[in-house]
Every structure is written in structure tokens, then in C-alpha cells.
Length: 534
Image (cartoon, rainbow, N blue to C red; front, side, top):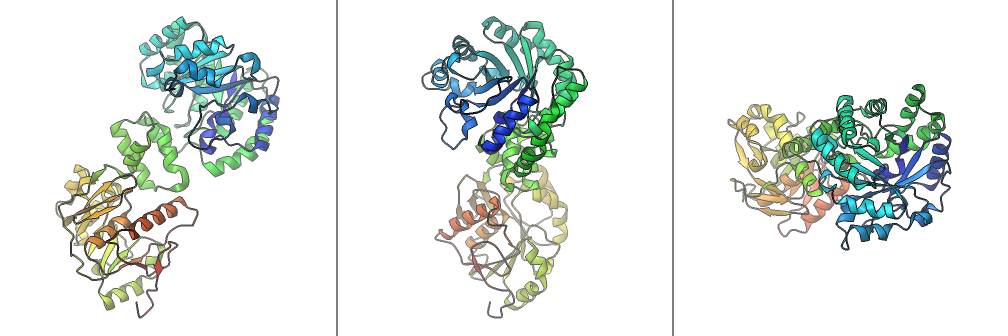
């Protein structure tokens, strides 16, 4: 049997706020396609942030929908949320659910981490007593051995209130062999129905789902166009095509094609779920896919930052998502604001020109060089920039460990000082800098932080521009001039982040005037490198 959980799992991308037109078309299509079960959404307890209707899937709301009579309706609850409820899990269940006879919901699925399975007994027992069919979804099963799988199955069998026992390939790193081994382990101690929820991090969700079907699994989860957290899931339309060709039931996949090619294709273009190298690496290293999803959302982080974050997370193990851990991963090691180099007075009242990597630098490089020759500012170059003659550069500035690693073999050729926060540089990279003049200006990453001291700074992210501005500030710059800091579109999240940081800088007592001398979209004072009076 096929359980389509598009409106539940897909909600991780749009806060469960689906357009009503799309929902109505979805309900009609899954009915015509003869899908067995739809998981209409979650049933969350009250949330602190906005969530759409399918985060709560209340009976009152569901009764307003044209739910198909030939499809069973399921909702999911998070065991962790119910267990931590102030009045206890049983009370939480009764807060969320009435008796089955007054609800359009047929099935309630309990999603649980393996260390919370025992605490799910009371949740399942209460739901069963209310008249619901109860499924238990075991997350991250791929992280334990078969013997432990068997022990869990044996314990759940004794509850006598679970109809189907699901296992989720949470990291998307299972293959047909491990799927079959898990099924065999469950069957050794469990005599009820079995289900699989496959993730597509490594592009194997469909293959794993078919292997499960061939080895006696009763339920397979899928979503339209694979819409779901991280890389997504088995695609419902593809699964139905494969199943009909193999003689499974009388599904009609053609009913789903217009919806997937139109509405859900547009949603995928907007939210960008689906397999990629980042999700592949997260699967290989057992990293929760939400880390990748959050870093990709809004294009806030560049390729180097995401790869560095994955490299950090794989060394620390990150099977559970945590926002603070993500911030630390993006910026690398938290670092220390107390570097060994005191930059006080280094600029001695002179202008400082910080040259960024934007197109404005290369486009106006001749005039920039002429300006440097006429006015003799101290020039700081963000990372290595081939368009900038090294003769005009006083020092190169870098603060992200991945960028430092990429460029480390070029530093010796520059014969110029390198300003970096050594506390955030791994030992292996430090060893490549033995012959380079390093000015260790410290940096520590702290959410919402902004502080500048004589030998380091505290920033909210490892932005090389703000690191260089911190150096120029404590160094006593008269003015801070910027070139090649072109910025992004006003709606780009990277633009918004930089604007917030620049506004925070302006509030510092030690802040220096900042002037862009090539075009920028940031709301800072602008002059022209071609203006003789600059």
C-alpha cells in the first residue's frame, strides 16, 4: 500500500501553508490515482511561530476539505513534543485528539527517536483507546544494529496497540541490502504490518522502496515530486508507475502527472528540494539533512561555507538538528577574539581601502590603482584577487578556514602579510603558513555579537569584510573605503544580513566613516573613484 505524505513532509519547506487550490487538486488527484492513505499533515501542539493549517490538521479544518471517500486519512505526531508536554504525554494526546468517531482521521503515526520508544507506549495506548489505528515510525534506524532493531520490535509487539511498525531512512544512506536486513530483523520479532519511509539523499529512495516491497513491506511512503525535508522522498508518481508495471494493485499514476508537472514543479523551483552533492555528503557522514536544508534556504551561505560546515559536522557527529550547532558549523570553530597581534595604531590616521571580490573591482581596477598611487591609502585585499596587483596591497585578509585552505599554497608567493584569526585555523592549515608573515588578529563567532578589541573581534558570522573593517577600526583608520563590495539584490538574504551588520557597526563608538568608491547596493555613503576630490 502507498501512503502519500506530501502535505505533511512537504510542509517543511512552506511552513505547511499550501495554497487551497493546490490542496483541492491534490485531493482529487490522489483519489483518482487510487492511493491508499494520505497523511494530511502534522498535529502539533501550539507553536511560537506561524505555521499553516497542515501543521495542525485540526478536525474542524479537515472537515472543510473535500476528503476523498476512497482514501484513508492519517496525521503524524512527534513523540518528543508530546513527551515533553507539561501535563504528560497522555494529557497532550487528549488535548490534540477527540474520539475517532468524531474525527475524519483514521490513522495516527507516532514519529519517535530510538531512545524515546519506551515513552511512546502511553501515547500509543491512549490513541488506541480513542479508536484510532496507530502506527509507530522509528527514525534513524540505520544508526543501530540489527540486534537492537529486533529488541525494539519485540518490545513494541508486547504493547498490543500498534498496527504498523515503520522504519525511516532518516539520513538517506541506506541501500537495498541494509533495507532488506532491517526488514528481516523486524520480522523476526514483529508480526504486524511494516512500513518504510525512504529519503533520497543518495538518489536511492525509489530503489530502496521497491526492494522493500519485494521483501514483504506493507506500506511505502512517498510524496509528489519527492517534496519533503532535505533531499526529499520517494516520488509518488514514479513509485506508482513502477508498481503498476510490477502488477501491484490497480493504481492510476497518470492522474498525478498534471499536478506534479504544474503546481509541484513550480513549488520545487521555488524551494529547491531534491538530491545534490550536499545531501549526498550528509547521508555519507550521518548528518541530519535539516542542516543542509537550512544552509541552502535563501542562498545565505556560499559553497565554501556549506562544504566547511559539512566537514565540521562530520567530525562532531550531528544526527540531530540544532540551530546553534549549525551556526558553529557554518563559521567553523567558534574561535577566540584574543589574537597575538595588536592592531592598535597600525593605520595611524590614514585612509584604508578594502578591496572586495565583486565585479566592481575588476571593472575599475585601473582607476583604483591610480587612486592608490595618488592618495596612498593602506590597501587590504579580501582573500587573493587576481585582478589586484599585489604591489598596491599592504596585507591580505582572510577569516574563513576553507578559503584559507584553498589559498594557502599561494600565500608564500605574495610576500605580503596575511591577517587571519589563527584560533580558527586547523593545525594542518597552520603548518602550511610557516613561511608566511601572519598577523594574528583574533575572531570569535557569537550569535548577534559585534565587538572590536585591540587584538581581535567578536562577529555574528565569518564575513571577511566585517573582519577587515574591524582591523581597520582598531588600527585607527581615518576613513574606510570600499571597492568591489557590490552587494546583492534587496530581497536577497545575504544582502539583508550585511545591512544588519553594517547598521550594528555604525552604532559602535569606535566606528569609522565607511564610503564605497565603486557601485554597491548596500545603504552606505557612496563616492566615485573617478572623483578628483575623493
